Image 1: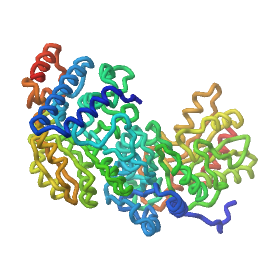
Image 2: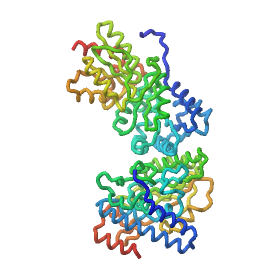
Image 3: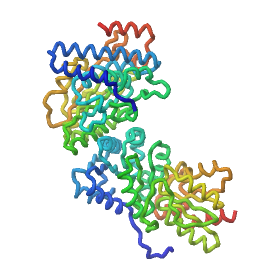
Image 4: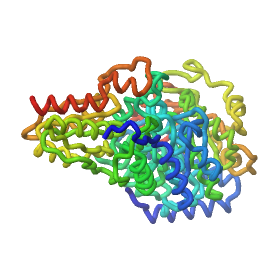
Length: 293
Length: 314
């Protein structure tokens, strides 16, 4: 099991404090810069490793950054704290994005990112909770995160804890039936302590979701399963923040976050081939320039 | 030995009683089920602990995932469903959410083997041992009688490791002293010619077979292999050294279950012994009661005795 990086964790604490006191425009800029730094870090990891899921990583990073740097009640130095909020990345193939985010928050040293997907690295191509602090359950096969998160939300309620459970789902992943079993359970039990975020980038591995096995009308599906639904721009940090922190109803909340696969890198955006294509050194350099703007 | 008046028990009863007793002692104990409150014998549990019985409806993948989420939050979930559906439908959840994630869930495969008799192969669970034995880090426990079921339930609650518990519905006599030690075979009868390694419903039949074989001058050792994984390899090695042959008996497919596990030990010994594997050999069962099917597939005490005697004289 990796251990926290106290310096990075302290910086994360300062970020959270500064963020809390910042004006909206400043907040937006703080999260934008933070997310784009993680994008660059992630691209470099993927370049070194020679593998990764670059498109989905780029699409989910604004969601991950908003959660870890402005919303989640966690402590990188106490990953086992019983009343921490739980975060589950159901789309486990975007582990690179999660690792870059966790390292930036100090859950483990950033130097560890250099080992991504290398022999015996703690940072597998899909996240492993036994090795990586901040990972709550091992994901990878799709359709697993939501049922486990429902169990965590049931547990929080049984324990009379105010902790909240957040799960990020891919949109293509919603073709797996297990999600809908769990959506039904959460709706039936009115698990208001559960938030599912759908990274709605409309692309899956081989084609557009709507050309493969269409998901629309997606909001109506979740509503029919007993959830409240909010639809936001998944790259608008303040919109995400607002939906995560608004007063809750009595039902689980599904946030449909409309995103762009490959977001932030012009030549990757909304292009299906960048699902798991590995960028060249020159492409990573070009991307880093765009992301530093 | 095989007196017709011998009392027999449905192990689900002992399972449920022990689970309720544990739940009274420990608030972390919860039950998760798939609309199987009745068939998993959880009516009493539900009555006493309505908030701690999480029935997700007919949704096994969800059930196992929910169980993992509870376990990862500090609860001790007993995830109960008919074994064919629990293990077949939710196999990937068992692998990823439970075993690989090291979430201490107790998976309770109810009414396994051919307990559902006439309902047919869709409802039989003869593949479960084979499927689950391939999964790293998952303990597999098959109690032989109600006493051992109780002890295994109690052990599983404190094991803090992923466990599959196969809970029998087909009635069996009491054959053990009621103790259970994870990973250790129970020596129920010593013998010097042949060892019968049996599990679950086959254990009482193995004892009956040993008794009958003794009348023919064949000395049969009976091992109750109530832990299939990790296997008590030392007990098998002793049997190889101290007896001349091994018979395995399981209400399961021999493709990967107890027989295959024992054989893997036998063939890697410097001086292997002849073996016979009793079970179902890659076949879907015809229509019939459980008792009929056990007879059909050669899983009676007489069949075990015959195999042991033949090997002793070979």
